[in-house]
Image 1 (cartoon, rainbow, N blue to C red):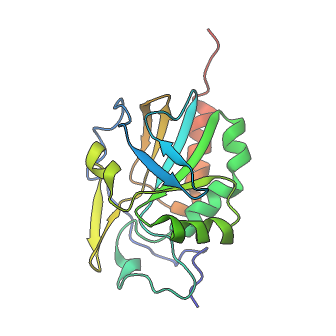
Image 2: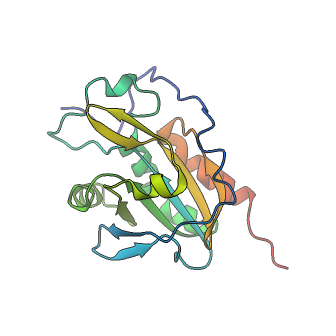
Length: 191
C-alpha cells in the first residue's frame, strides 16, 4: 500500500512557467462550488477577511492507483501531505489572519468527503469537476492518464480580490508553513 502522507525522495521540482502571473489583483468570479459538508460556496462571496484557497491536482486514496508516472510529473505528488499540513496548521493560519481555509480540486464531492473524513480535516474541500475556476481565471492545468487536473497553486483572497499567489508550490508537505509565514509577515495593520 502506498503511503500518501509522505513524499518520495527526489521528486521533480515544478518550474515557474508564468501560468499564474496574471492572477494577483484579479477578482474572484461568480462561481458556486459544492463543499464537502453539502453547502454551496460562492467564490465571489467568501466574506470579509482573507481566505486561503489551495488548489491541488488529485488526492490519493487507499486502494486506488494514482495515474501512471504520477511521481515523475513535476508538482503532481504531494496532495495528501499538503492537505495534512493545512490541517495541522489550521488554527495557526486562522490566528495569523486567515478567516477561512479551503482546499479545491476537480475531484467530486463524494471522493473529497472520504478524504475529509479520513484525514479529519477541520475545513471544507470544494469540488470543481468541470474545472470552472480554471476556465474563469485561466488557471494552469495538466493532463495525464486521460484526466485534466489543476496544477498546484494557492490563492490568498482578500474579500473578492486575489491578494497573493503561491505558484509553483514545492515542496507540498511544507506549503502550509510557507502560507503561514506569508500571513504572519503580511498582517493587516490598523489604520
